[in-house]
Image 1 (cartoon, one colour):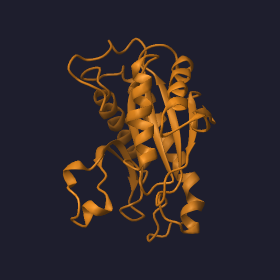
Image 2 (spheres, helix red, strand yellow):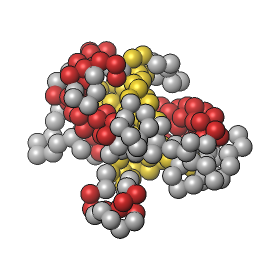
Image 3 (cartoon, helix red, strand yellow):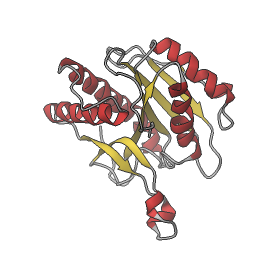
Image 4 (tube, helix red, strand yellow):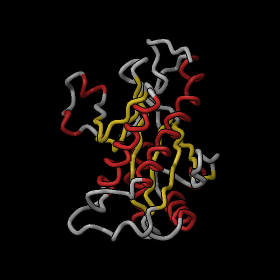
Amino acid sequence: MNLDWQYSAFGSPAPLAREVFSEIEKTILQLVVDGFQRWQAGGFSQFGDHEDHYTVRLVACMKDVRRERNLTFMPRYQDVEPSERMLKGLDDPAHAPRIDMTVSWGLLTDDAYFSIECKRLAPDDLARLYVVEGMERFVRGYYGAKAQGGGMIGYVIRGTPRTVLERVNTHVQTAKALGSEQRLIPANPVGWLDDVFESNHPRQLPLGPIHLTHLFFDLTGLASGPISGRGEA
């Protein structure tokens, strides 16, 4: 794939950016799925039951896969996304959003990265938080302001991916910033993972529309439930 250094595949209006977007996104999503499989094969070792404990292990396993395959993609755990105003010294960078995971690559500009937000999921209030503290942040531009695509990972700790999907879509339909046209719908599997969904979201100018891919990973039986004193980030 011949990628010109001056273009960012996520955010650039250049024809090249649009052309390579789909292929880059597929490669990144496959890296996520393969990283999860590596974590699973190792017995799901993790420090605790918070989403951060899952995500840091997933990123570590993705890095292992990336090194073995000599990929140019670089997963990062908890990356900061400062706005243009923050970069110009007009807003406080202390308020910059922190995304759970980014995957970047060295052939393009600094803006060439794919943002992924991770949430624990269950058919209860966690489904609501997935929408209001995940999807809505992409729609508002708090995450992925320059992007045309992004990802979300749902760690299903109770119920099934399908029952959780129903609860998530219930909250999408009633959310002020979303609506029934922005519900999650089935998407093509990624490798062995069948529980893949997508959603499309218009955004207020100057933001462009964004397409989100949702990967639901079954972790039922692994987590013990909410951790006292800690909310979902």
